[in-house]
Image 1 (cartoon, rainbow, N blue to C red):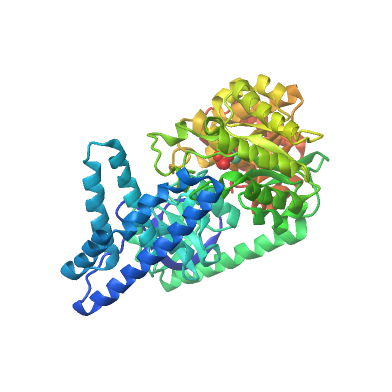
Image 2 (cartoon, rainbow, N blue to C red):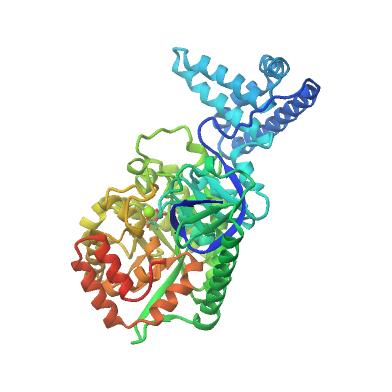
Length: 571
Ligand code: PEP
Ligand code: MG
């Protein structure tokens, strides 16, 4: 038995069989020797993977040709010509036969040699082709059943996913039914993998140093999403202790949902708090918890774009937005425009390089630079508004100027589509500059949405994707004070400010937010019963008193102590 310690990022207890997913550089390519009698079957696998890759590229090429035009479709011509290149095929077959290695290893070696040769050429155009060659390799490996995304789509039932890190794009195809828990070496509490794990109710632990080395694939693992402990090959004593704690937790969860959680959320003294849902996929708008929520407070549209070789066209986007709007109708659905960048890189942008993506082309900055992409999305949202109750929200707003540029464009599009009423337009407050510009933004925006995940990252200069940089959920006094400032600024301008960062879904922090003056919170639907109950049991005067004391704190521990003493433990 081995016990490893990490940081809990999604609560709950779970056990299962370790599935070690290693996506570091050079990994994901299985390497093994083969016997001489296996050469023919490896050649057969190679032939089949090449044929399937070619078929896939052909259909991608025709789809792009009809949607975007010939020039864009020609990008794939280079990929296809490599697949059809007889010299490439012949050299790969020879490697298999000469070195007696599996086909994945032979393809990897052949492509690496080719890419290196191309990278040394003086012409920039030819150097760029090295990327095409790598792309072809990924595709062929995928069809050999060993692409990283493919592995995640076919996890055995009862898997504890053990990984260095999990990117948002990895999570797209994740076989959720089969994942009981997630153990990561890296990744912050408000990073997108953690957000997703909490939204799905999968216990998760991060910061487990060397997990992918230490945990043997196939070993039995316990994951404690409360304490951050990961036990590998537990002995009998640990096994029975785990079983009883797990049973207790599931009783408590059932009690909360069934007995307490009904109707709108109201504190003991009658203050109404509006609870909304954060969702990333249309199907999440139909979760059972939605019935007690006031609508969708945040739809993260970037998940529609992440796994795609080309961005979804207007009609595809409209279909998704309309499905969400109708699932929650007549309640509103807030559709946030693309927040690409940071750790959210779509497949069609994999070639772009940024030394520090969280300070690069993200959110509205990206959208304003990519006008076509942005306007297509605005049109799809405006068209949805012809039929449903939607609001539009811009992410990573820096100030009144970028907000107005985007809002004006949206208004024009609504005008062109002859909409009688322009849907409400909101600004996310998640950069320090937006806080300094709050009075001006609040005058122009119809509503505000406070993204604490990014706000904490930028206020504390602490990368949200790195574990252990901030106290739990960033309960630093500076964060409490900046939130107080936002609540006051929004109230002075008469605008509703809804907090949609992860803190809103943590009962103790949700109480602080209400004490600071917020009356709207948006969170993963699964987390709403606990928040609902915590607020239902509270009294506004007490919450305001706690908030006043929290604002005076001088360090994170003082804030945590006050919040814990005021009610519950941090979730
Ligand atoms: C936030 O930053 O708090 C937020 C809600 O947006 P995202 O997590 O998608 O960046
Ligand atoms: Mg954000």
